[in-house]
Structures are given as C-alpha cells and as structure tokens.
Length: 263
Image (cartoon, rainbow, N blue to C red):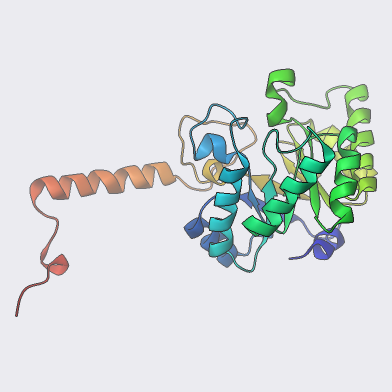
C-alpha cells in the first residue's frame, strides 16, 4: 500500500484500516491483508489504561510504532500524533511528525482538527510527510466538546465539508470521519476527491476503521454502538486461563508431554 494507491481507491475499492499496538497483532494483520495499520492514540485507553487519550506521549507512540513496524515490515502504517505534539507551534508539529516517521518507522501521521490545521498540514507535506486528517468527534478535544455525534444540523455538516476541503487543499491524502451522522459523512465524502475512512460514520465513507480490541471483543464492559464484535477474545482467554489454573492446582500440568527426563 502507498499513498498513491490509497488516493486511487476513491470510489473504487473500500479501504480497510485497523488499530494495532504490538508486534504479534501486527504480524496477524499484515498476514490478513489489512490495507492500513493505525497506531492510534487510543493506545492510551486500551493499552495503558488511561481515562482518555490526552495523557499519551510522543515516546509512547514511537515505542508502539516500532513494535508494529517490526511485526508488519511491509504494511502502510499511520501514527497518531498525540495531544500537545502539535498545535502549539507549526515548527514543533512538523518536528514531531518527522520523529514518528524517522524514529518510529511510520509511513504517515494522523492529526485531529479542521481548517485550523491547514497551514500545519501544508508544512508537513511540503517536506515529504504524508498526513491523514481527522474530523467529526475529536477525542483530543473531549474537554471542549465532549463525546458527541457531529453533523446533526445543516450548519454542522457544512462546517465539516469546509474543513474537509481545506484539509484536502493543504495536502492531506485521506480523512478519518469519526462519530457523525451517516448523512453528514456521505456529504463530506462526496465533496472531496481524497478518501474518507469512517468510524461510527455510517456506510458511505470510502473505508472503515475499528479499534482492534473492540472488534475482537476483548473488553466486555466496552459496548459501542458503532462497533461489531467479530470474536469473543475475552471469553476465549478467560476460559483458557481458568483451564490452566485448574490444571496447575490439580497437578495435571505439566504432563508427561511437557517434561524432559535425564537419560
């Protein structure tokens, strides 16, 4: 996968993106043929146990990008830029984006925000850093907007369209649309020539992304309307661990097949 192929997929083939944070899962996703691997700042909530994505640091993202690159050497990897790694100054934003490419091994970066990010995206792309935008529900702005569905009014939808057009003009190669009405996401997707990738945005985006731990059913306490559970990993792991506990307690493990004897 390359930026050119992602751009060419618009209106032709749906893009599949999944979050991933570790070596072994990355190996599986590359083997399965996932188009784009996203090392999301969601690692803060699903890996580190933070209450939001806000505490995630550059060092943490770089650490996880390296692990994913080791497991998926051929994949197209997008790294989220964490809160305060951009937005304070254009120079700092470009520098941190470069670190995710140079030190982490990512192919591209993703950042949240609308038209106000146009200049920053232009600066990044001008030195060869591919940028994916992110509109709609903005987890890094939870203290300002909360977790609310965007695009419920004509005015909100028009703003999303204008923001998307600005990001495209600035050089973004794709845009994640999160937590919007289906109608708004469809309107945005039709108003720009770069692909859109939806999460909780309905059927009419150019691709879809889910958080890997959500779609694998790893946390039974995390029920999300936009998510579809494709497995019950929580149940499978719980059952396996309980069986192991039982075998150890009863003396069934280790068995003869796990034992080495002296000659």
